[in-house]
Length: 224
Image (tube, rainbow, N blue to C red; front, side):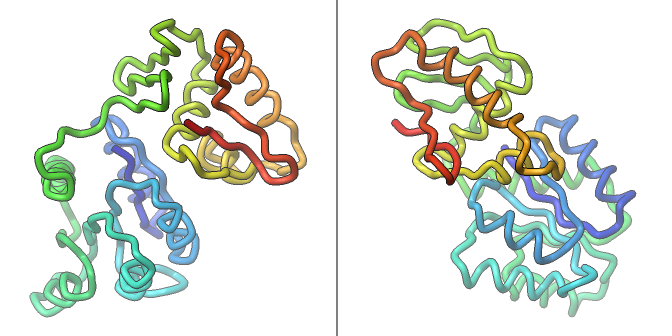
């Protein structure tokens, strides 16, 4: 399951990212409300962890903006604001759960999993992605096309997973760099093109129905 952590304190943000990743989540993290809004609107996160004290906009305003724009993923508020009134306000403004700092990581993990279970009743957490005859096992970190295992590097697997999570949507080079490489890189670099070329050779080479397309001047598309 993929989480978006919005926390302006660098130490806490890095701690949360490490702890949640080690417990099996895939984590994107940022410290600004505007960046969080942009990431959340991509619609790829199963749940959000949001601090209320952000440097550019208030966390409650961020949650309200996201709800008004159709983001329905559960939101766990993580804040130093401890009063009953603050907690009630957080839930009324669109939060699904509220934890105060300091917090226990085990409780945070348990609450997140409970939120995810409620948001997808009767379903287990997704451990496999399927597009046509392509299947990705997120636990074993394996990919198969028409039952044949693909020999992918770690970076190629991450790139293929990102494309599968956005099936039918065009993703730009900047989006790929941000989500797969987890860093800001000059978008004039050809690192993405090189990896797409290698990945396409492994995914589509033996098939009469190619899945990965390059949208000239825009980005890339994985289609069924």
